[in-house]
Length: 102
Image 1: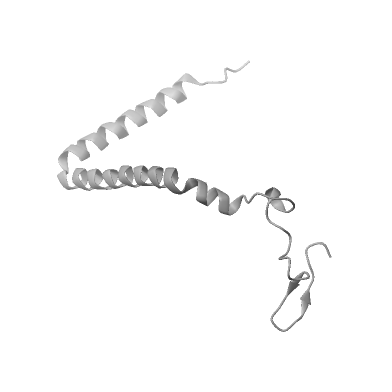
Image 2: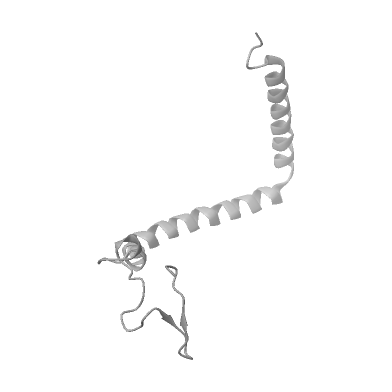
């Protein structure tokens, strides 16, 4: 019976990964501009994630309430199938369109 993991295959993958990482580190240390750009982009990413976190804390309930209305009927228990003053979907010309039930 053959083993599920071929250690020679895993060893080759690990050697390739180590050589790639060592070349990456050598190239990284030789290029100061790349390091500066990485730091700027990484800082922007972290700042954006923190801003999204705080914005969600402030406005999250409002956004949630917009999509999950309280009440009876409709999807998620809140949104009605049609507006109460219209019978089905009507265009401005007065044509009655089929609903998804028809």
